Image 1 (cartoon, one colour):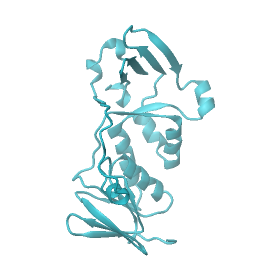
Image 2 (cartoon, rainbow, N blue to C red; image 1 turned 90 degrees about the horizontal axis):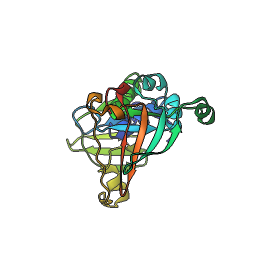
Image 3 (cartoon, helix red, strand yellow; image 1 turned 45 degrees about the vertical axis):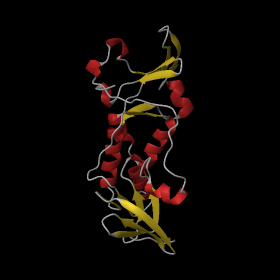
Image 4 (spheres, rainbow, N blue to C red; image 1 turned 60 degrees about the vertical axis):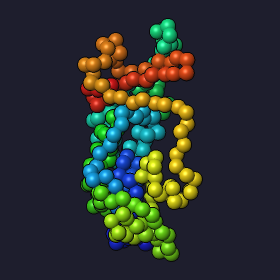
Length: 229
């Protein structure tokens, strides 16, 4: 399709980090976008995300570097510890002049809700981005001029294209791939966020620390300007 109007935007299923990041990228290229979110309110759950230099390059392209820098934490190092002996195995310095020269961008960590809010705020400043809440997608249908999305409410939305960013239990993927629901991998990961005051003082440092042990590991690092871990 060579032309597009606000009446036939690109539709995005899912109003999480992926959905709003895709919407912002498209809007900055002049594309009208409509995000369809099944929850009744915008919000992100989860803990932290480690961000490599390639991600900070993407932030620059999206025009959100300053906003990200305000809420991200830039660790001094990546540290690996022996979980049995308590001894340090290795330490990789981060955000040094050498690191910056080699990668051009920093390494950081961020609280998922903070990243989500930065993307929401950036999209709200884009007149080409709209969103609807409390709308559950049942299925979609492709046609010559684009795609039609059918909602649980009985309504339907037409768009030039559809992007599935609706998470692990994706309706869009389920219809497109027909490969069944996600399967259990056999691995379990527990994520938690603690106020800095509840973290042992010896662990309250500006590093990403990995404790490695037999068939297990623990990672901790500061988030949200160091207020939480």
